[in-house]
Image (cartoon, rainbow, N blue to C red):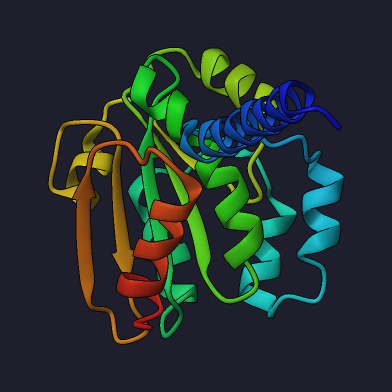
Length: 197
């Protein structure tokens, strides 16, 4: 091989190596936004089959919008005493709530065999809008309809949405205001504040 051809071949190899390194770095630096869950209610229930009875009762009411107000909500909490609980206060008109719902979809399926998830639809004046949202973005747990917002404010100590409340097995509480940007961050907080791990 002549020196000229050798130089051309070496240059081609160098260019290919630089391109390969650049593509690898680009792939690792691109932000990965969470994709909406493609699970149906039936798939969620299937993945959560065999959960302990109080959690199975929540899964049986997946994506339902329950009535009954504060007394029904407090009775549900009492039935979960001694279990970790995550309460998400949301509303269908709340853009940050809608944005974080995918994280709650996936985390509630991943953690739903050991943690109780419950929603509070707080301040939605139109129950139909909330139901339509839950049909389009199902979750593996029910929400309680709170038209006035009084229940949500009492439980979360805040008039804002979204707010997430964590209860550990001993009843210890942690309240977090603001939306979750990812399933990973939500699950990190579930493990820390609800499961105590």
